Image 1 (spheres, rainbow, N blue to C red):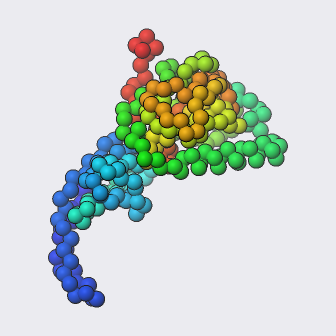
Image 2: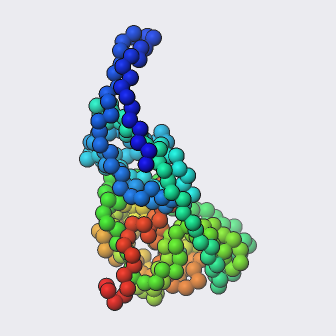
Image 3: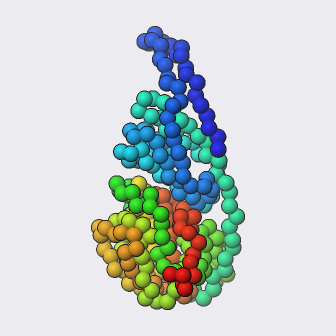
Length: 283
Ligand SMILES: [Zn+2]
């Protein structure tokens, strides 16, 4: 981690004011929690009323000085985090993001109808509309602090897909996979991994029964391929509340839950936030 301390600039004359500006010596404590690697969620703690920017973009800061951001699948080192305390003290860090290696995963047996580029205008319009609705849901930045809890697995089962892997569907390269896939029987309950508010709940062409939970400050979870959605937009959920049931709808080759996490547009890896998957017998 690179930490820069700024020495006071004691004689900075403004040509207009001819006054001496003194920038206070670095004094504030800023702590970051989370491993700086691709796909990570990083939680920061600064003084209350601190101003925090990431690459010049202002981040939301709670009254207690809490803030959060995500590093996406292909994040490069060098994002600039700056915290300015209410006394004007400046803390800066260039984020040394560690790269990860991603797998290549072949997925066979996806319905030809879903994979085909030949779709009716109506279907394409539906796909576009659903894409826009999901990006609207992920743009939200609610005043909730569910992201600061210890996350829990939404269900227990074998992990059949991981974050970041390059997907090849029926032999054709597709986009990387952003979720963690957990195989389970149709109807297995899906629990909320942390507190939040439902910002999307509908049946989608590519992902079947889909729900989005906003955990606050731009951090959200998406749940795909569900056979049943048991929540509606605006519902408040607590960690562990059942939000739906596992299914195989949309682009899925068998029943499983695909759990994704986002910080606004950036995709983050849910598996970095939960303990190792327990065996069913340990539940
Ligand atoms: Zn998946």
